[in-house]
Amino acid sequence: MANVTVIGAQWGDEGKGKIVDWLASRADAVVRFQGGHNAGHTLVVGEQVYKLSLLPSGIVTGTLSIIGNGVVLDPWALKAEVEKLEGQGVVINTENFAIADNCPLILPIHGVLDGLREAAAGSGKIGTTGRGIGPAYEDKVGRRAIRVCDLAHLDALEPQLDRLCAHHDALRAGFGEAPVDRAALIDALKQIAPFVLQYAQPVWKRLNKVRKAGARILFEGAQGVLLDVDHGTYPFVTSSNTVSGTAASGSGLGPSATGFVLGIVKAYTTRVGSGPFPTELEDATGQRLGERGHEFGTVTGRKRRCGWFDAVLVRQSCAISGVTGIALTKVDVLDGFDKVKICTGYRLNGKVLDYFPSHAADQANVEPIYEEMEGWSGTTAGARSWADLPAQAIKYIQRVQELIETPVALVSTSPEREDTILVRDPFQD
Ligand code: GDP
Ligand code: IMO
Ligand code: MG
Image (cartoon, rainbow, N blue to C red):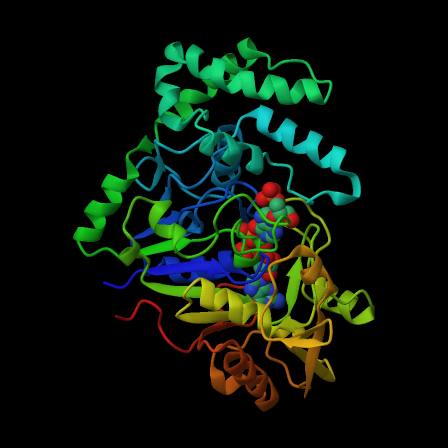
């Protein structure tokens, strides 16, 4: 049975949540495999709007939802999100929700360190979400993280805390901060432990079992390929691997489990936080894209930077992540533009490039080469079939697919779940 791995192919906020929700009713399990509550995935179902940061988007349809070991988990953020969604009528219980017991925790000290570093960096700041993501991943690879399974052994935590605090206290001292309040930390962990532990289990085992039974697994990526710690616009990236391959290592299934890699691609480009953005428009057109697309961050409420579609970046993301097909979202935001532009290459130091160079200074200096197309006066908003699209919008979609060398599998035409055009079913074997 085909599995599907959904990943963002730009700088995040491409509409992953909407597409995962649309696909979830046909999946047997939805799995988050990296990132943490830096993600903000928005689902619109009729009058209801759901904003998810940690919970897999499958939870809204009641599909088995799993947080894999590749995620960094803030237990307090999780509890708040579970309660918020339950308040919206979503059922979350030990039948339909599980957390990998080897998942590292985000602790309050991680958020503090994230904030201290960003404040000290001044204009060189990354523009993180302030959720402690980077420091938590650092502690994971530094082999000093507290993990979900440790919550069942808090009485034996002292040696681990020694290691963790030796590291953090030194860093904190550099910022003039007091050492970690260990008693308060243990107390807080003791209080939250029962809530987290009810869902904790070796999820690799459960996933392997459902897979053998023929289940369809839907992997839900967070962020986007251009924020990947290896392949993204380093150092202006997040601290996890966001590429499709992480679905395997971040869940406890082998690489063949990833199946159809569905890259989510916005019909233009946005970015939140600092870092290079070749097609950014700091003019009325950028403003118009932001207003029409409601481009404000789901997590931090920050205004997203906006620009034209960059085919060079998306072609690169699709290649790096082995994208089988894309879901092109927010095509409706381009409705009513007289002309639309697509970046097809870059100029750098008198040379033409067909890829995004690795060095930060080169990334900042490339000049986009544009191709201009006629816009469309008709509307794509709410279209549910290819035949409903204006001819010029079809031309735009076809040009995108040609330039990124990857076929379009889905088109999304509004925030609403059902306003989606199926071109090729990603679940089809
Ligand atoms: P994610 O992080 O990739 O899940 O994306 P976000 O939820 O952060 O941002 C995408 C925003 O666009 C959300 O507000 C969605 O409701 C909205 N959205 C998704 N698809 C479409 C679409 O096709 N058209 C329009 N107009 N909005 C969309
Ligand atoms: P979703 O899943 C957009 C960005 C931050 C910052 C950089 C590092 O909703 O697409 P971090 O807090 O991760 O250390 O911040 O990454 N960022 C996102 N941008 N969408 C996201 O998630 C993001 N998650 C992190 O703005 O530039
Ligand atoms: Mg988002």
